[in-house]
Length: 227
Ligand SMILES: [Mg+2]
Image 1 (tube, rainbow, N blue to C red):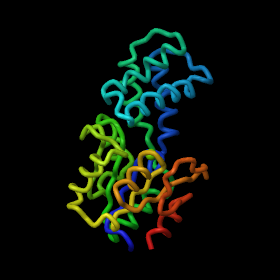
Image 2: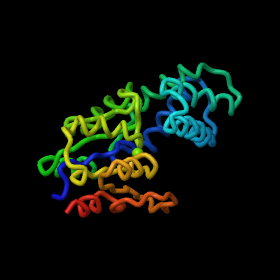
Image 3: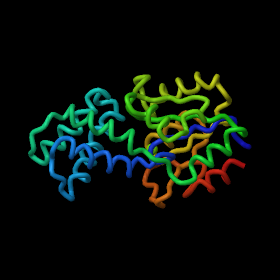
Image 4: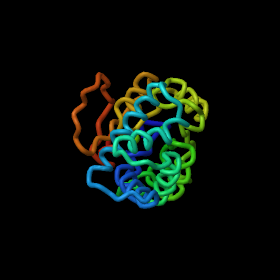
């Protein structure tokens, strides 16, 4: 084993966020008594992307992000509802609908005795730990760092400062960051001096200037890259 620590991103790396989010959103529409239209989820995702990007760039606070995305969505579809309540329903539903990608539990279980495992996630404090518990992987990690709990997010070096303190400062070349997002996980790891694995199951093109140490299209390829 090449690495003393492997730091996994959560959403769309281990957890199927795309599916959970779609189900949670559909259920929240019901909760808010809004009839579902075919394009609503993509319109919500657009609003959500706008606020998360602003948040990751440090332009807005996490507390604003929560209801702001629903405010944008409601304005877009021209329906009046309480965006904060919409958000509460959505987050509750998100915990209940979160599932692991097939093979994630096996991979983590297999790694548990060979290396230390960390979970590094840009997520909201109300839901990230409950979602990890819900999927049965919470206990497998030696450290879990939720951006919203510490007030700073990937790729900010201050986020990685916190993670390295939690890990008791291993050599950076002995740490691997694994994640699906080139601009938070891979950029963050590269700029901090760790190795990186871009989890890219959909074979997307890398249009960023950030080149990961290796690319994995599935969990087998992550395991191969650790030797
Ligand atoms: Mg992710």
